[in-house]
Image (cartoon, rainbow, N blue to C red):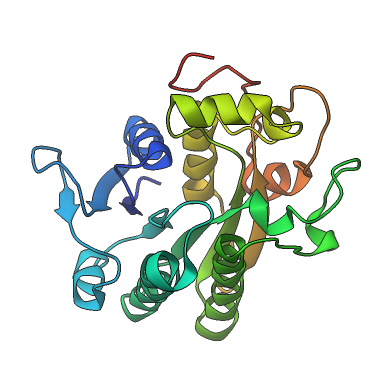
Length: 246
């Protein structure tokens, strides 16, 4: 069933790939971003830290994919609180108030970055964060679980792998001992989030899923939950499917 889907952070690296894939699948995509291009169809210029703007933008949506955030480690008080805490709350509560059926929240594999990487990390192993950014993503998982349980939303928290934002970020990924194993291509990101929108889930269900491409050497995070819950199967292996030269 084709749906009305709002994507926050639509002009970011993940957001553009997700919007393109959803549109190709026939969904009506609404792009919400502080820097949205006015000539794009259904572009909404707004700030997730502004509750009224978020509430208005989410009216009549079937699904929300919430990607907007300050990425990676940054000053908690000056840079992370507004988008990653207040903005997250605004999106979740607007989904509740407007009766949005499916809410997909971007978490991160950084939530489990404190685990040893010599064996596969599973959802059941629990979180182990090492920085404040990951703490905000852990809260995204926890608020998602509460909104599913208390208000009947269908919520997916997606622990996203390492998706390069620019050439320097791609070089950093390639140099990391585990980066190419938890890589998430732009193309696979589009496939994953489209699968999250299309998946059949009961109201009140909450799921945490890892979203990565195929590992280059070793399986570092468990791909089974994403396959079982939403039918996502990765296509790419580093450096396939990303937007920058390797």
